[in-house]
Image: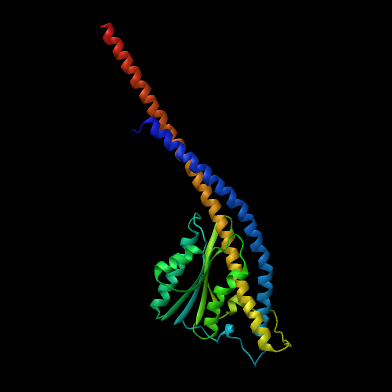
Amino acid sequence: MAGGKEIRSKIKSVQNTRKITKAMEMVAASKMRKAQERMRAARPYSEKIRRLAAHLAAANVTEYRHPFLGKKGAPEHKRVGLVVVTTDKGLCGGLNTNVLRMALNAVRKWEAEGATDIRATCIGNKGLGFMQRLGANVISHAVHLGDTPHLDKLIGPIKVMIDAFQNGELDVVYLAYTRFINTMRQEPVLEQLLPLTGERLGTPEGSWDYLYEPEAKVVIDELLTRYVEALIYQAVAENMASEQSARMVAMKAATDNAGTVIKELQLVYNKARQASITKEISEIVGGAAAIAG
């Protein structure tokens, strides 16, 4: 059995760890509320621009069809783009592991189906490191985003992927991120970003016709580009809210586990101390008996 001094040292170490995890839990809880507010504030804009894009896609514009809308039928998967949204930091449970496992399975599936060109855009340090270790073709990335998503930091890396699709270098682009459900549940999602699908756009309630000024191409190009940017921003906002929620839960579990370990170590320490006292008493009694005899 370990000595009392060694056990006390272990107890002190675990107590210090518990203080750190408790502080991180409280910080994550504060950031989580702010991240959830930003995520919910972005949803009305995303929903409104989605409706506009749905009406545009269903409108009778015969002279121009945007490349984002693609061709009828399922797209090919020979040349695939993948946008992976992860966190910059760890200590958030299985959040990154789940979404990266989903992305890896998708890449293996596309390769098995005969994909010849798979390109990746990574948002977040964890995803970038994973894709580089995997040997993937990372064409752009954005890291060190902080606690607040900024569209100006995202536009550059995303534009590289969007331009590749518009130029015909890619057949389809997917987006992998973690969707926020509630504080205790976050869901990894892999969905088609481009070409825009009817499932993504939704079915408009009625068919609208538009008058375009100056022309249909200028308006539709600008609107659909903004729509894709809104999708990316919303995904990053959802991922950040999920990150803080997962970190709070993970740090709370670590704090609770540290408390359990401290109790166990204190029990061991008390047993060791009791054994030491019993031994000393036995030695005293034995010595006294020897002197008396």
